Length: 118
Image (cartoon, rainbow, N blue to C red; front, side, top):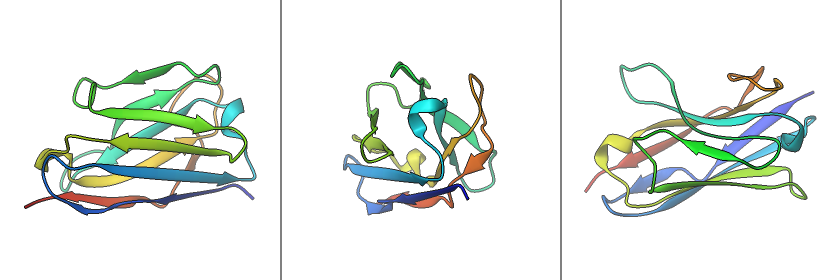
């Protein structure tokens, strides 16, 4: 059974940082394209970054230069390091994986809330 478990969300002030984690069981991140998505209130879920099996990473313009994706194959965990956070980064963040070469994959995490507010 595949399970993705996200953690690390919370309330942070503008300009602050958070690191989200997504731990997988039943599937190996290193075998699939993996994405980080977010969904703000009243808006659609959007892809903000992804990491390929080879470790190449791409970012949406909205987070480029502020967010960093990494992957620890030994822990089967992907991370989203977020810095210089803005109120518009407030959203539920999801990791996703499970298909080769395309997103979204078959599996989603439960989501973790990030709120950026003073």
